Image 1 (cartoon, helix red, strand yellow):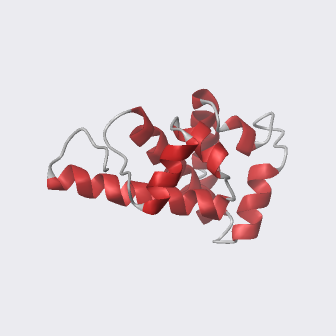
Image 2 (image 1 turned 45 degrees about the vertical axis):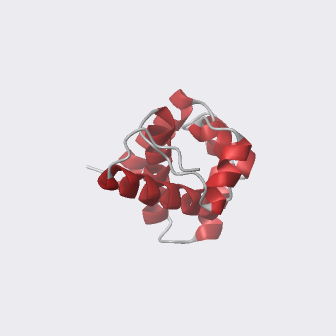
Image 3 (image 1 turned 60 degrees about the horizontal axis):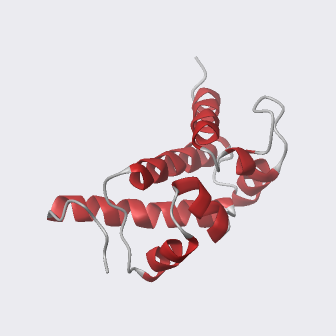
Length: 126
């Protein structure tokens, strides 16, 4: 069962691309299925269905949160020059500027937004 609100081919393609990118970002950041479910607001069983190709992100809150997670991954990946080990360590380490470990912070919407903003400012200093 593919769950999307807009069944147009373009919306379905966007959902598939974002679903795949979200799973890839979570894997490379070392996020467990439980953490990913907390970040994007879906149950662990839905995350399993995403991995099996039985669920595609559609319009709504989960889609937007997943897009933020992918943005976080892309920013961090650029900063650490593709070093997956460094990215995972950064996610789990205590960050004084963020006042916590990013992996914990991103499990709430304000924390996810704050971490993304932080990385965006570090990625493109003015």
